Length: 273
Image 1 (cartoon, one colour):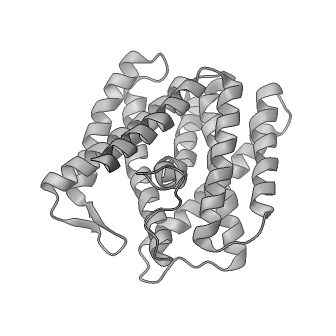
Image 2 (tube, rainbow, N blue to C red):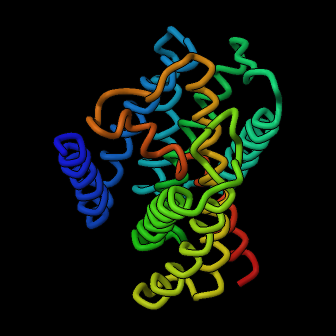
């Protein structure tokens, strides 16, 4: 009972911090910078990277793609640089998906560790900010809607899988995940997309529906990727900063992996509209 209470309290604090920060662009920028630093610290331990270079790279990237874009939205060359970052991030994530299907562990030679901290982790926090500024205006509802879709997917995947799950999804990586749970999470995410489209003046229902599928599929893959990282070093959680939950990376792994695909979809919408 005490563990459930602790989990609920820290879960509430996490959600309250996130939602509260959305009302001010500067507050959101600061919060995600802090989240990024904490996540990098946790991830460095998982992959055995003992250097401060990832913090420096993240800070520079965050300033260039995050803060400077906020104060200088018409910065020349920014759009092209963002496209390059997006392509590289998706490329790295696709390789991580490939590693899921490998019987061996995820290769972690030194250069790849820097690639992962830069284009798997650091860039995702930039895409959070860019998603909130979709259309060169601050639209926190799109980012909040994406987080809600992740929470709905994770919650119903757990309950459906626990009560009806029989067929394992990736047993060697995450024994508790089931195909039934994945389908349940996907279904209720699609249902949630209708209410998000109805109560937010952002994207239409069809766009939110596609976004819910993207979030559910790539969010689940992101959870599995982090599970494989943890299994390789025989740890249950990425950290201890959130009692009852584990590390911050444990709470953000789904949206971190899905973020470049979410932003890619938004760019496609912007291009065809």
